[in-house]
Length: 389
Ligand SMILES: Cc1ncc(COP(=O)(O)O)c(C=O)c1O
Picture 1 (cartoon, rainbow, N blue to C red):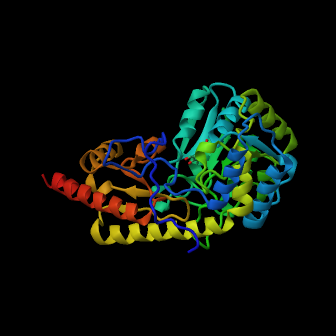
Picture 2: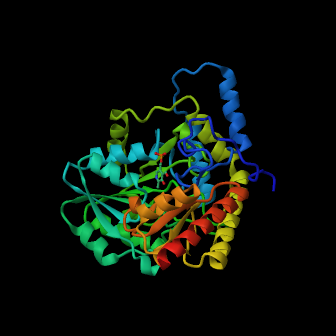
Picture 3: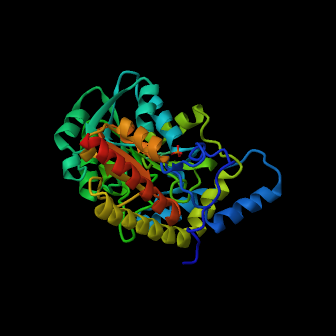
């Protein structure tokens, strides 16, 4: 290994959302990583910092070229420069697009469990969440009758897809995407494909860019891309909307501009370029490290806490844990585990369709994963006692 993922980085005192917790607690919740960014990115940012002047920034052609190079090399799709629009984040893209492409009271379809901010973006913009629960009994596959009905509803104007899916870590295959794309297109429903997690897949596993699947997909989508999850740069606020269709792209560009989320901060451009042009070796080692963390959790749970079922996944550093055997709801479970052991996991129900699940973020040094598992064992012992009372 060329890069060090084992040495813990001290994040306390940095105003970190994840670490703004009580002393002694172990945060394995919000989706950012406890690893320092790739040295290649840090040195690009250092150079920018050393310049010492932080005025307004433009979005240069090299920024789009970095995305284009990365997606063509790693994911087999060739975006064009003009198809890419800078944005300060994926959630801002979602929110702006909902505002621009729907009128209040219309339905936005999501397949749950899914990233909780999807709910907020839809509700905050006056729309209705039309939930299509994924089939938990079948590896969280699409519930086609529910999805067909939801997309055929004339009140439905938008669907937000999450690929790979946070929190279950599923990568949607080409056939599934083609069917979603066709149903959406035929019903006049635009698809926003949030692909922010696409670069953290298990070694050897590939995701399929929605826009590469078919002409119907390509012409009817807004794709959210970013280096922020894979390279741990969320605080730098740097993302892109890729919109192949020119008319739709015009609307998205207007929306992002009107909402003033299309202007980069002083570090946003350098960070994205350095990640996509020079971050490849770091990322591949990181994926291997995270995969080994996942194997460790799987083996540990099978051996020591068989009541907790780790849902099979192919992507993301987020693990979806089914605590059904303990008979508690997800909110109570999260509170119980945190209160008794200081292990802070995300409560499943915020993602929808998750009655007794918790989400565990394993993007941290192996020593922290081991400590998390130790605390989980402690919680499981108490939960067993409670169940037997
Ligand atoms: C699916 C998904 N989309 C978007 C985001 C956040 O994106 P941003 O920080 O660029 O707004 C997250 C963060 O966890 C996520 O999981």
